[in-house]
Image (tube, rainbow, N blue to C red; front, side, top):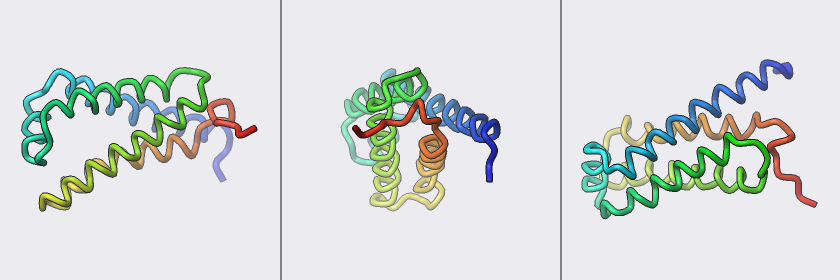
Length: 127
């Protein structure tokens, strides 16, 4: 069993890594990074989707890291699940390699572990 301090440390490591990397990706999306535009074209999506995905990733990352707002955090975690599962499926549907299909799922693991380990103060309580 994981003790409290180790759980808190693991929570913050996965949260900072997951949210931080998605935040950086969001910035690259909204600035139309060369690689991101090429990926959208390769996957068959319009380039303007990068703006929506980028804003979602940036806002979701902020929501997960800031204190309070547990309902907003739940939506942010859910949004990341949809985003990353969709990204993985998109790579599978165009016949990309197993590495390209699995890459978004690595980020998904970080996000899910962050969600599982979040402290009670960051959980939404149904009333």
